[in-house]
Length: 169
Image (tube, rainbow, N blue to C red):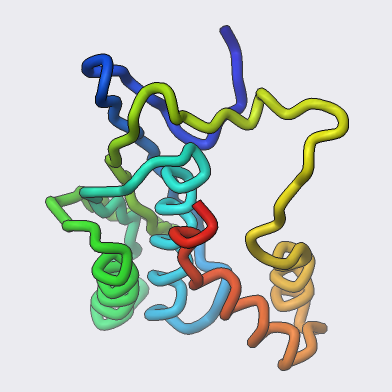
């Protein structure tokens, strides 16, 4: 069965399933620490979207060591780790590769009761849609890359992107 879900779910028993995801991307803001927070919050949101509780995470990093200072990587990882701590998630490892383009994200493993999995493929006409964050961060990020974003809009978008969806979940 093909679905476009946010994470994979694997049933371990009648009472327990694991929720797994991996998400990483190129920087969408200039500040490395904030980028780390955004990337971690984004990956954690995949587990929350399924109704799960994230437990562990692993970093995935592509870093151009020959062209960027290692302090940038330290800041990205610190931002990601701080967001994971906020979520009560334990960092258990990760992997890095040298690459010409910077990319960062995390793989997250969480848990859920198999009967409580939330699927986005189950939506039907007439269902109520609850927005956990305002729409438009993608548009603001595109404007930022083009150098035409309003500073206040960027600040609001960043606050939304670093916010965890744990309460909404």
